[in-house]
Length: 273
Ligand code: E4P
Image (cartoon, rainbow, N blue to C red; front, side):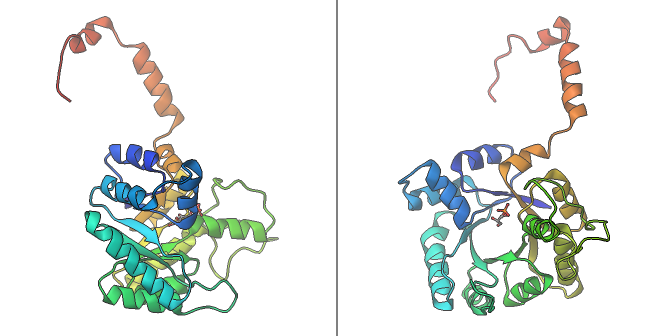
């Protein structure tokens, strides 16, 4: 499973890429807002150009802001034409259903289909049902992004369960019979990811499932186990994938046991690193 960093913070993106295991970047308008809040007045064009270069050939998703077909297509082309020449790694992120009312809009799907035809790779975002994923894949999106964490939030809220954003929610749902267990047949965020994976496999759809809105290491493990192609994670979650108390304890003990005879091996050597 590929790991993307879900961030528009250039400092953490740089730090994350130093580890050598990051396969891409996802941004969205809220992440861009956070970056601007940190650096008011920043030159957005230059800032994004730097991010594209740091990504070193790995894909970077940049999101459109409009919700009408013409606007999505226009913005998708602007983002792609403005930024893809920098490093050839721009993916345009388009909401699967850009409506802000309960009446679904077909404009996202139509824009995905059209932009894909013009050669612009699309990440279909804000996917909350396997059916949305199916339509996005049929329209040709290269990445389809089910929002696992936000589905868990929704199910917990419906069931009036207290939770923190990063709390683990069981992949097979909550086990109390007094609760409304699911969101129309989706019992958890990871279940949503798993259903998307299954549909794409069953119907041989080439789109990759990009598990988004993952907020803790166990969710990442489960996304990998159900066959997600990609997981996009905040840097805090990427780092927390490395943590285990016994690893820390083992480290502390090894350090305590280092003898001078062993330390001497490393002393006085000047090497190019
Ligand atoms: C995905 O592309 C989104 O940027 C993201 O994963 C949303 O995560 P959140 O629900 O934690 O905000």
